[in-house]
Every structure is written in C-alpha cells, then in structure tokens.
Image 1 (cartoon, helix red, strand yellow):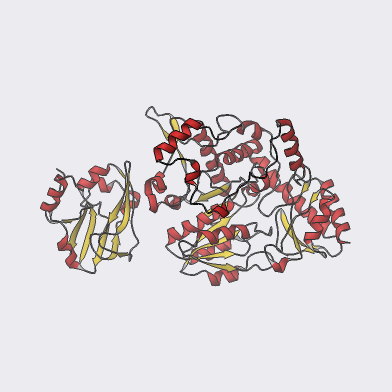
Image 2 (cartoon, helix red, strand yellow):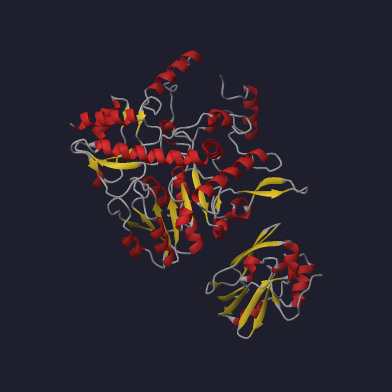
Length: 447
Length: 130
C-alpha cells in the first residue's frame, strides 16, 4: 500500500506553486552527513496471515495477566472485568477516537458521562465529579494546581505514601507555578501525621494523602483533614474507587478534593494505559475544577437533556485564565467504569472489596509462614502489602516467572531503603489454589 | 441610553467608581450589565488583596460571556460584596446599588480624577463603548 496519496503530477504542481524544482531542493539545507543515503533497513513486506503469525508470536513473549497469575499492583490491578463491558463499549455509538460533546448530536454519550460522574461522586462521597482525566497521576497533579488556585498559597505537603510515579508527575506540573513540595515520612507504613502537623502551615495549599497508600497501608484521612483544615489548607485524598464499596469514602472523612486511578473499575491493565483519572471535589470548589463537566438540564419543552456545563472554566473560553488545559476526557474508559459499577451493583462492589481484602490477608498469612519472609510494615493494609524477603526481590520475581506467577513489584526502584521488599497485590480474582501455589513457589525461591 | 449617574467616575472597561470619604466603591455600569445579559456568577478578590490601576480584580460571568473586571485605581480591597456569591443577579437588578462589587482603599486617590466623567462616559458609550 502507498501511504503518500498524491500523484507525480500533483507533486509537480505543488512544487511549482512554492517555486522550487524538486523535493530534493527542499532538503538541501539538511547537512549531508545527517541524511540517509541508503534505504531503511526494514524487512520485506509480509502477507497478512504471515504478519499476524509474527505479531502473535511477539505478543506471546509477554508475561501478561491472562497467561500468568498476577500479584502485581502498585497502582494498576488485576480485578475481574465483567464481559458486558467489552460488548457494550464496542458499539459504534461509543467506540470512536473522538468524544462528540455537542448536545444536539450526543445525548447518549453525554448521558453516559453524567452517569459516570454521578457514580464517582457517590463512591467518593464528594459533591461533584468531572468527566475524567487521563490517569491517577494527572488527576493528582491537577488537584495540586487547583488547591494552589483556591488557596493562593504556594506550598504543598505530600505524604511519602503517595505513589512515587504520581509524585513525579506532580513535580513536573508544579515547576511552572513554582510551588514548593514538602514530604512527610511514613511511620510504620502509614504517614507520620505528627510530622504532617508540623509541616502544614498558613503557607500550605494542600496536604496530600493516599489511602490505601502506595505500600497498601490504610491512612487516617479524618485526622489528615483536621490537620489541613486547621491551617486553612485543603486535604487532597488519593483513593482507588474500586475499594470504596468497603472503605469509608474520602468525602465523609473531610477530603476537599478526591482523586485517583479508576483502572480497577473494569478497565484492563493494558501494560499501563490508557487508564482512568478520577477527579471529584466539594461543591464550593466546582468553579476551580479542571476538565469537562456534564450537567443535566431541561429543553424548551421541559424534557431532560445533558450538556457540557460550567465551560467558562475551560480554555476555549477563559484562555490563559482557564482552570486547566485539560479539555477532553477518557470517555471510553469512563464508560467501562460506568458499566462495571452498574453490572456489579451496590452489593457486588462491596463483595469485590471484601474478597480482595480477605484474600490479601490470607495471602499475607500464608506467605509470612515462609522462614525469613515477613511483612515490611505493621500498619493495617487493605488489598496490597510489602513483604520483606531474605533474597533480592528482583531475583525472586525472575524465578517465579518460571512458575507463570507475576510475584509483585520490587520496591528498590522507588526507595533504596526498601531494596529487600516486594509489593504484593491480591484482588478478588485470585483463588485459594493460586495463592497457595504462590506461597509454595516463593518458599522454594527463597529457600 | 442606559442610566449614567452624574456623580460617578467611569473606566473604558465599564466599571464605575464612587468616592466615599477616603474610599472608593466599584461596580459595573448599567450599560455593561445590559450588554452582558443575565449575570450568573461573580468572582471577587479577598479582602486585603492588592489592586493595580486597570489590572483585573475579578471576573463576571453571564449567560453570554465571561469578562474580566478592572480596578479603576491602585489600592487594596477593603470590602467585598459577599451578597453577590448567592445573588449575582443583583448586578443586573441594581448595578449602582446592591450590585456593587468591591470597596477600595486607594493608595493614589488622585487617580479617581483621571477616570471619565458621566458626560465623557456617555459619549464613549454612544461611540460604541470600546
């Protein structure tokens, strides 16, 4: 197939129009040594069946969660994905690269986003949720900018329990407005809130706490909220909405902004993305929120309809004074989350949380029976925990690949003091047999 | 022609300014609110915020447009009309009264005299207002 659709005659016409003789003339300024003088070293074109066989072979070399038993977490989780999701999102009305927001053309799309926002607001216990942002990391970074704009303060205090990858994105975002970040350490797995009390001051825009935190431990969000509010700062809570069937919603604990990664709500891990940035806030902050927002209204005949609302926050109207430069959402992933929660229902979501927590605690109990293996932290955890191993976690992970087990995430890459630790996540999907086999394999690997 | 009270001073951005002892009360003109249509939201600064002559101090949002509000003179915000948070329609109903926006403690009170008089503002609006 040719990918340059214009003909030789059209090329001559274009060259004549701009007044050069040949395409070569356009490249004359590129130094000769920077130019390739031979054809690209690519294999010959394949026939379609041959190409598919080749690509399948490459894909089979991946250790994915379908072929392996997955205990990976650290922000992306192997929760079960009900089959209606795949069927419904593949409908042509939804499955488009572009989200049509025009109300006259897109009532179905807008309604699905409105339902998504409602679900997120109910799960987080917040008043209002936006139409979604790219991922958990960008949602947190936007929340930090929002807190700065609301409070007109320049310092942000982050718990060391916040996902280090989110923190890296926050660091990039705050470079422009020159915000200062301060970190409060962990105690025995949970944030040292006494340190937070000292760090948060009248200069602090927000205190950021993730619960469960990156290491799986539960945080005292209520106390964090009290600390933030006493200094006139906001509490930004980072949560995983799939846990909120069981865990107390951040809104009920005093969070002003609640953000997080919604991948667990029916979105495949897909080697890290696309995922779902969840963003919610209290009503009085709505005009400072980033991103798209769908509202319900009535038309001239009193019928219910859906439209983008409060667009005056956005950059196509407010230009440089917009609350954010996000002017889209991840509509298909948000739709997955909507169908997921609707499919599971209230009891289903509670069951997912209860099973994940119970299985994680069973796994921890089994694994720590292995000599030399123990929990790294003493703080209560939910569905994920850090294990201290008697052998280097990187080697243990390699060894367990042979048993077709993805054992977890070695923590040295995030914190050198945790170089002996492995982060293990257990979802409702794991069976007792899988957990027992994991414990047996780990026992052999560290023996 | 919209109402242009003779005792006030005016900016080219359609704010009015009224001397009140040592302070200056500010709002937008009847002509401005007519052009904007129904005002749905007014964003105002905090008390104590510093203001610079003809720099933005807030935002007024109507069903038709979003517009910046400009400070008629240098100074600090002494008072903010909190009523507008719940009732932005006061800007439409009573632009020179209950629809006021802020009170400024001016640092250069003489700047008031550089603003347009009612007569000048009327001519300015008659000429297109921008």
